[in-house]
Length: 470
Image (cartoon, rainbow, N blue to C red; front, side, top):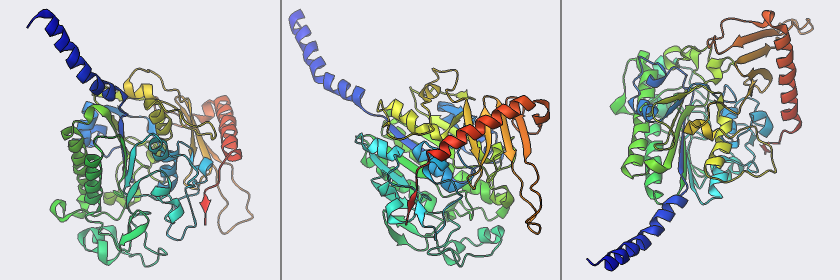
């Protein structure tokens, strides 16, 4: 080929391929958040479990980054979910006072700005498949909070439509042995968008059906940016699985459920890989709070952490987290810097180069540099701990954690003098299990941290926004 013709041919090829390269450069990344319910810090192979086999999530960790100091904003469901989606401490959005029930008359205010709202405004397809638990009234369901489509249960799987009455008083082992109890003893609804489509939902198959919809959603939107929120309703009790993975031994109930969730995570990941979406997709796997330890073989493990669900000890609020994004998140790495679910909204905004509106305050921070490994330190120096009822109880500042546990008079002596609070101070860099109380040795640090805790809580309280109310 003559030299001029060769140059001309090369220019023509470049002109034809340039739009494709420009499109690729302008393509917004996809986001998938998989949120387990009541899964403990020690319930994944990549976080130290020797009993539970989680090869798919372990592969995510091998190809991505483990976050070992990852916090949720409440030790129970509803407030934790509100924090994840809004980037706020639950008290700031009025969702801090324990969990919602079928008779509750409030929910997440649709005027709040969620991750789904933020991405939908950029042209993302958005979907939620799983447990919502931020209000079951039409005004508070996912479609009013930024999601195009929804399939899932509106509250916890141990709650009954319409008034939470008639719940079975049967030991967990017996429920596990009788898997048909999913439909004979419970009356938990399955909703599609704003309508109940199955009552009761067959909890044996619901984890898989959430995944079915998730896979279909990814395939349908593979050529456009998407946000998939997949909040599984398990391993919250009662525990159920499909017949083909069922282990009849109730001692293995929790293990069986987690391994089933892991397999379903594998289906989502396989879909992303098979559609060549891996290079443009972030996947985050974490849990809404720590394990429900009182249910023993139906609850999980906090690993080296103290206590579990419902407490402000690390076992209640430090959860396993794996983030995956080939080419953007370094493979096989670990981050021990302080990060929380409240940081996901501003981080996603930074990744998509779409600033958040300045008309409302949030508590999250952009930690995108920790995902990519370009930052050595977190911008988050402080973190507040609220009880499951929304009372301020602690402050994390660097390696130090202060808990001020107020006490109440005995029930039979309402006029008795209120005992002083229990003051606990831990150096988490040396004592992840919170076994050595250093409060007596460092009174000045206790005083300064307590003052700062009260100052930060006062700001949140003064600027708190109202939830939706019926």
